Length: 377
Image 1: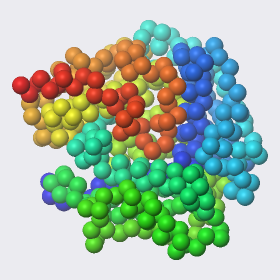
Image 2: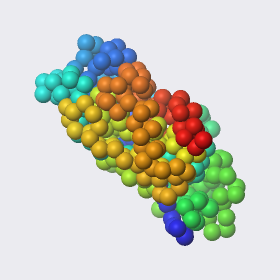
Image 3: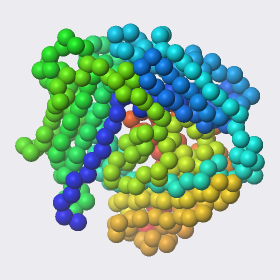
Image 4: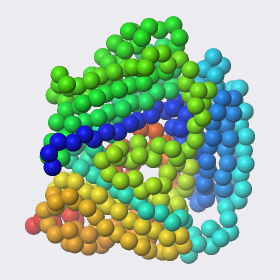
């Protein structure tokens, strides 16, 4: 208890690592769209003038991999040679092999497609039950990208990142301590114009006025010019932003990346189910904060370990909550996929601005809330 600082970062979709995640999930969606039972595990590497797609795929479908890669790069905004990286001139190299027969054997017995520890978290900080720092960071990051793509800010380029720190008192958010935004931009725009625009049209549109106090520090491109960005300035790779994909520094990260993996990969699917569990706990009022932790071993059909942490905010005994969670939600890998209806092309939308807190995703829906409300009666 007492005062503490909690923080989170959110890369924009033109950030090299996020672009790699986006390409991976765009390809995954295309495979699943054509064959819902496609087994996909892809890694993307981006650098100036080149995109490398590598991994293992087993499918009954055909996907034009270079076409999907170029289309995704263009959608993000890398469409000009002057950016140092663009959809039309970037080489697309592929190295794809069939899924290992040993992995096929483990999955075919309804076993987990990977060995993994996963985490789900929810709290009362925000309306979508996400920690405030990561929620604000994603919202500002997405807002800047939308302003650029809409044409309202033609001087912006695709790369960028947002860092948010929030002062907490007795585990409750009090105000935003820092909002630091880095935006790639055209060489001829002044830093003054850029800063005024981003603060007025992004930061102040997202952060509620009561969270901005005299101690709040708002900075845009504090290091100066940011003209060269994207893969031309820094290599990008899938799976390098797992903390910003999840909950910032407020909860643990399960340790595994999500993008480019089909739902048989337990590190992805079980993370989604764990979030759904935690969200039901908080939304039902059983706890103000809840973290769900699970462990899976490759080829085994049941969860190896299961626990929850409610930080002393629970309204009923933790063992009763744990028992109800295991009664209501399936933890078998195959049944998790069916319960969440994951054999659909829904993954591209998760690659940027977080995998959690987006109300249209199946693991965010409070479909079993009544079964937890009754625990308090």
